[in-house]
Amino acid sequence: MTRSKRIAGTIAHRSAILVYIVVALFPLYWLLKVSVTPNDLLYSEGVRLWPSHASVDHYLFVLKHSDFPRFFQNSVIVSGSTAFIVTILASCAGYALSRFAFRGKYWIVILMLLTQMFPLVMLIAPIFKMLSPLGLTNSLTGLVIVYVAFNVPFATFLMQSFFDGIPKDLEEAAMIDGATRFRAFSQIILPLTLPGIAATLGFVFTAAWSELLFALMLISSSGVSTFPVGLLSFVSKFSVDFGQMMAAGVLALIPACLFFLFIQRYLVQGLTAGAVKG
Image (cartoon, rainbow, N blue to C red; front, side, top):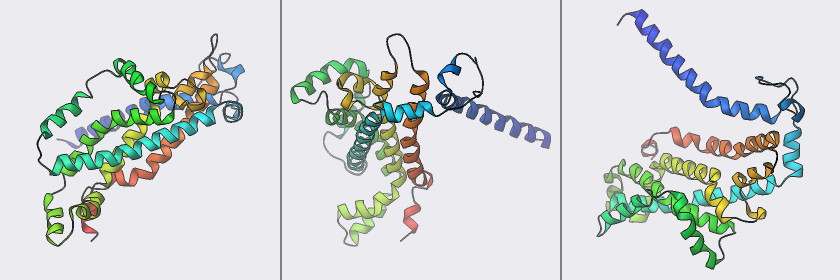
């Protein structure tokens, strides 16, 4: 391949990446743009890349005169609890599926796969009927239980794939030296699966943070609503407060961004990084 062809290929490749980035980030940019556009300019200025006058009035209204802070707090509680519980359960279940051979293992895997085949909308009625007698239909606890139940299967397969990538010789050598199975798991295997744990935490947190269907169907009180449901409060019968809705959307992005900022160093490290640390 000649030098000119290599240069042309590099330019085409980087141009394609740039186009993808622009397309992916443009909705977020427009979200920010509308959130700082005053109401009197939302429709009068037409389509502009940036308003002639920016304002934080929408943010002040959302924070001081709406129920968004409570919706925000509820989402943090639900998403954080769900991610924490699912990661613990998926780590244990994924390790068991990866390391042990036991009767019924094949059918357990099949049943877990079957849970991912059904549309969520068809499960709303039976789930509501099960939770209602227990008093869990209008509570954050019931929402966490539902989210955990639906996220554990996929998270288990995700963690199992990480455990499968770690040689069994590491823990077997530790057990030969006198370590128990639990100690080998907690002190040797888990440090090597930090990228998998981080990926599981990120996936489950994001799924619970943005989930709307169950939160809308199982929660009837605004006091325990999560922010996806709370965003609907900006939609009235005859109008939509786009500025306030977009401001709430921008604020709702902050926890997810901070969460991934916290775990990103684990996402990028190699699976065997902990093996050379002694």
